[in-house]
Image 1 (cartoon, rainbow, N blue to C red):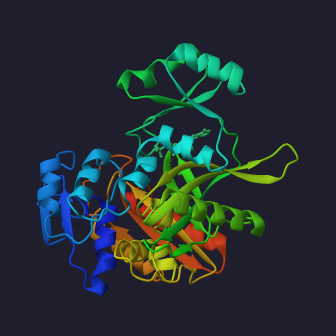
Image 2 (cartoon, rainbow, N blue to C red; image 1 turned 180 degrees about the vertical axis):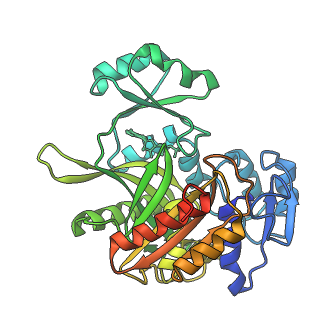
Length: 377
Ligand code: ADP
């Protein structure tokens, strides 16, 4: 697996019961996954020679992020190494301009959008193609957790996104009711499974809480979202886990509709709830798909599952925090990533499940806040 973050750590964990030998290409020996994987190569995934040397002896390559240059992936494929998801699919998760063009071509509902050249072009987009300002600007590559996304209210405010020298995508600012995610897994021979559609609650551009299934989501919209994600996976030739981030909106008649925000082709934060809350987790199904094994049952185990991220903050003594959280809530599941604590950085998550949503949410909220150190009882 390329990339040593928490997604690789949890994918490795899911492969252990299957006895899968797992080799990791990690930026540093301290990365989250490098701390727990025995076969680690430390090196730069942007360097083709490093990738080639790493790939020696691997049956298949997969990823914990989407940043490996596409031409390097093509070179690995030319060397005879299966790359899953392959470069033709992965480019859509790497470049938001390519993603929007392809999704529009297959009829997937998207916000109005166009790649823009400069602030004057943003103004043209706002006045002739959108609903005026504000407009959302995104660098087509390199963004994550809201970095690389700007909401601008005038052409004068639009200079910043162009400074990175990366193409910029303009989108109408969607007046969404909430954010959803439709997660599916597809294998090379075309088997696919769909997880229940979830609600994803963001705070300051970072995912805070995921509720599975999304409360009060009409059945027909849920099925439409799952079908859309399965269609995207098939049309783009995705292998492994695909997260389709969605906006739930209301049309002019007040009926609920969905628009695609973006795609991730790897295990995704909106699927972490599946570790404790589904019969087969996103990580286990990603491993199965990448190895072209039959996929596991994606159905939930409980009525409600809530996942809340633990962000970097003022950490209390972790042992004392565990003592309190575990004693207070024996049903709580804690997943910490072994990462250095930086303010706002995702350093772990907690999962709770049960029959009464408000209680399940409160338990996850409490544990995440207590572990972060923002509450003391
Ligand atoms: P990232 O790649 O950093 O996750 P996203 O494209 O998912 O970036 O955008 C981050 C957040 O910004 C989204 O979760 C959403 O809250 C908001 N956002 C993105 N695009 C739009 C849009 N067109 N209209 C309104 N809000 C948006």
